[in-house]
Length: 366
Image 1: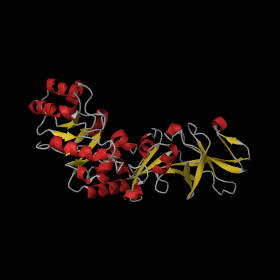
Image 2: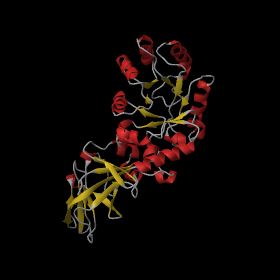
Image 3: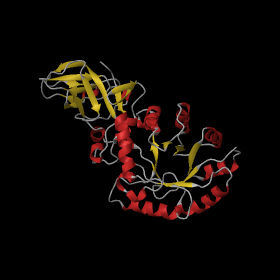
Image 4: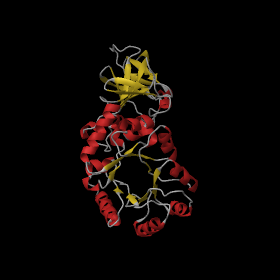
């Protein structure tokens, strides 16, 4: 009997990569493995994709250093760029590429003393208004970066979509057109499409794509699951029933007595809770899988446990497995009950969840 365990299917991970590559066969690939490989494990995901991808995208310098220390020699791109001038020697030492999205980063590069130049991706704000250089300032940034001795030539370019999962939203085509206009006549590479752009906007693929959530078999769209897009879920989150309790009609279960049964039933207590990263906001009725059937969660989520309504005639037993999400219960379905997205659920797993990796039916390591 195991408590919270996430089984990571590396075959599915590679399958998803191949699906994505077939959609954009003429682009090179930055595989996004930030946030601990979207909760799937930073280094194991990188190792599994090392013979497939051209490079890896991370959010933080610490993630890149972990990859280098773990033996990953692929190109690594800091998608948020560096945070301080003191980071630049570390980037150089670890052969990291970096986004540049603000004047402070530009000034730091101009004033640094480096042994050799860094590969830089100028991040352009084409409409999302989160990170990036405004269009009217792009020409000046290009000029200054091109004369900066700390910047390798040619300079490269990137941007990010704000609404690419909304297929009728005109903003996406506007962003594509603006990005293309701003980088025309430039020698460097361009990168615009993450998972939604790759799947739904083929004219956004440019030289490099940046698949993220799609690698893990999760749909970027609220009304679809990964299987609808030919993707396979990489993570199956499971735990075990540690107790089965008889609950009489009119009795309540859990903190705050949120759920009261309207009939005699049996409730299973499952060894997983918000301390493992399962969402405390999950409402009554959120599905879990027990012995091949969906049963509803009932009562408030505890730190270490949650409760499910097994029904009065259940033949389930203590020790039986419970799947919180996976192949037969897409994480997107669970996310809809919670009012969030699958990205959040998989990245929120805590360190006490045991990750077990397998390929072709064989466990590789835990």
